[in-house]
Image (tube, rainbow, N blue to C red; front, side, top):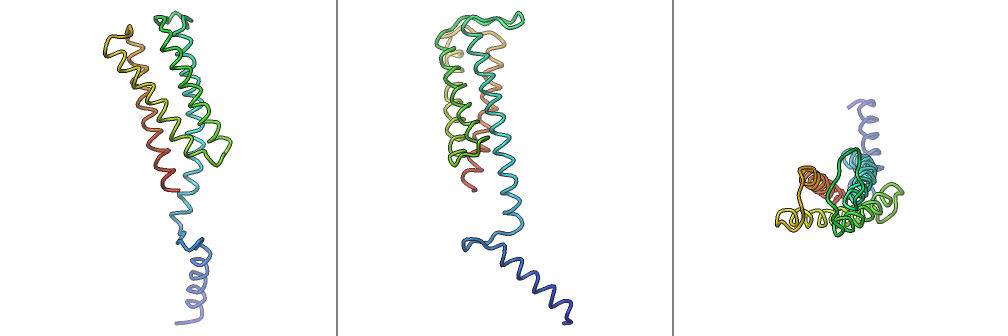
Length: 161
């Protein structure tokens, strides 16, 4: 080997040594995951705030407020449940956006709690305990899918990091 190759191999060894943290190998992929994890935290935090707004608008609709001619039947338990779901996901969004130490756990728990509330709403609609409209059915199914996807992403990031 010539001097150029030896210098190159020494530089690679030194880079690998710097990449090792806490006895665990931290290569290029782990560093990329950390960056993606930070982006995911911001995205899930922003989406959580958006979900909170949607939940609070739905709560107002079930309290009797009509938006642009779209009125929903007054269902007080649904208004209460959607207000609670909105407050819960808002707390999770705050934790993520403010980079609190509990952010990932908060995102997991708040998405799970809100998803549970939405699934109870879907069961109430399916059992006939609440009046249904096409908008209500669409809303519940879309928000359930979004919350489930967010829960999966937050859980994956929490267990990976």
